[in-house]
Structure formats: C-alpha cells, structure tokens
Image (cartoon, rainbow, N blue to C red; front, side):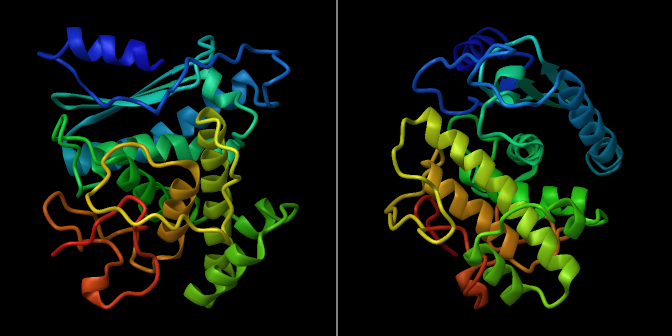
Amino acid sequence: MKVFALFLCLFALPVIACDGGMRMNRIVSIPEGSLLANDMTEKEFKDSIKAFEQFFSPSIDRDHNAELIIFGSWASNTVNAYAEKSDKKVMITIYGGLARHKAITKDGFTAVLCHELGHHFGGYPKKSTNRWSSAEGQADYYATMKCLRRIWEKDNNELIIANEEIPETLKNECQVTYTDIKSQKLCERMGLAGRSVAHMIQDLDHDSLVAKFETPDPLVVRAMNYLHPYGQCRLDTFFQGAICPVSESVEFEDDDQKAGACHVKLGDTRGLRPKCWFLSGN
C-alpha cells in the first residue's frame, strides 16, 4: 500500500530509505478468492520470491557487499510493491494483492520483482526525491534488459511460451535484433512479461487505451519523467529493453546514461528508452 510505504519512509528515515512504490490513484484491494483475482496460488507466490532471492543474492553479496531481502505478504490484499534501502540491505516488499491482479501472470510477477530490483541497480536517471532510486522508467528498462535476461537465459523459453499467442510486432522486432531462435524466444517472453505489468498499470490508472506493442506512446517529454509513466509508455520501455542487444553483463551506471544501454549518442536506432519519459542527453 503506498500510504503504508510513505508512512514507513516518513517515520524511519534515519534507518530506511524508501522508494514510493507503484502509482496508486486509489487503494486497490484484491482478496484471495475474489472474482477479480487470477489463479496464482500462495505456493507460486512464495516459490517465485524464493527463486528470485536465490538467483540474485550471491551476486548482490559479491558485487555490492549487500544482502537481498524480499518481504512477501500473501495475506495482504493491497496491489503494490516497493523498494527500500538500508545500509547494506537491498529490500523489496511485494503484496499478495498485486500477485492476484487479473493482468499479472507468473512471468509478470517476476517482472515486477525485477522492476523493484531496478530501483536499486538501474543506474541513471536517479529520482531527485531520494537520490538513490532509479526512475520508474529506468527500473522498467532494467527489468527486461538486465534482470529477466539473467534469470531466463538458460530456460527452454521456446517451450515455456509455446502456447502463447505472440503479437506480430513483438515477434518481428525480436527477430530483427536476434538471429538465433533461443534469443528470439527469450526476447518474446520478456515482452509478454512486460505487457502483463503494463496491463495492470493500465487497469490501476483507469486507462481505457489498451497497451499494445504496435501502438507506441506518441508523447515526447521536454523534461525527464522520474515518476510513473502510463501503461503504454511502460510497455514501450519493457519492449525496448528486450530488443536492445547490449549484453546484460554490461551494467548501467549512476552518472552516465549511455553506459550499458542503447543510446542515440552511440549511433543506436533500436532498443532506445522511449521519449514518453526519457530525455536523451550527453
């Protein structure tokens, strides 16, 4: 719940630095067994969190001398997740209400965890409000480009998405970027996970426009948007992260927007962060 997250921030500043959480124009609650809920189970919720922790904890300990801690509350019906930072602790909180949202698939749930991890390690641009957390759009870009790629690169993604209907735009763009089937299917899987999250955001925003791969957001910002873009813009960001060919092993940096990314100043024309939130600079 964003109200709870902000309460935590206000009253625990000496110890904990909080990211604001997902945009909540209203408090949304999805109880277990609700007609609004998907079919995710408590076991799947806990297993997904455990797998995520086990995958990233060793590298976070080794590379950042920090401990990854994920607080998952299946019992909480609130649709939200947020990141926190405390000394050597990299913290993520995620609620059962979000996992139960009708738009959230199992892969979409993992994409949300990746987004929250992106607040910690997504690099430039950083939010001006807390200085440590990467902007919302950047956390989305990190989610597909660095996080989901690492988790799923060794999976049999062709088999995993065999029964999914892949939008032609997603399929075609993945084929343009990657020449091998394995990478193409990973790209498609990441795109579908991003679409799941974007559709949840669309629902929370009461946005009547359905986010699609073939209808990118036409908005061009005059200043960097550090906060929450709308669903279509967020899908565009997940999508561009999936089709940017820069290796997931090349990390983003806090002071260089070109590092680890596709960027016009590097001559790139694909995989660019969308202009609906990102303002390209030096």
